[in-house]
Image 1: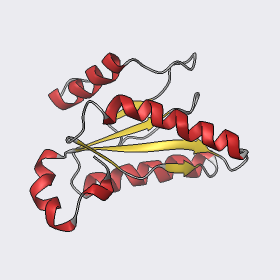
Image 2: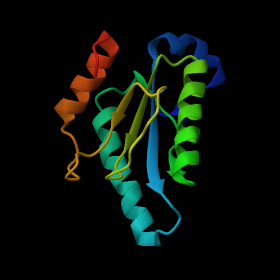
Image 3: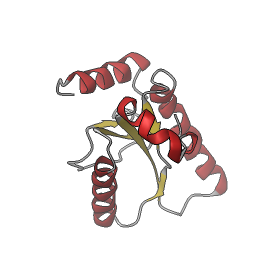
Image 4: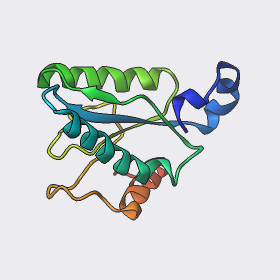
Length: 140
């Protein structure tokens, strides 16, 4: 479910069922050509489909963080965003990126979904298992 699908009037009713938010990270640095930026967004869409499609109605997808400032300020910004999302009532925050080699040191994120070291996307089953483990209280 996209953040924009939730009206102010519906939030109180839906919030108990929407305990997980997805925070997409494109990971661009501003040096991308138009076709490279397009490819980054298409890759992000592909990995997000592994979460959004099977868990529609349970996970709220927030707007993507497209550009990374310097690495240290990026890490602190991601930490703050995840922490703030939890303060708004989300129990779980899932970071997701298609950018190969992007690392997160974020204590407030409960799960990171990203490509494997070789760049391959995780399988639908792997992602589903990790999210279900998160919800059942198992370490992921």
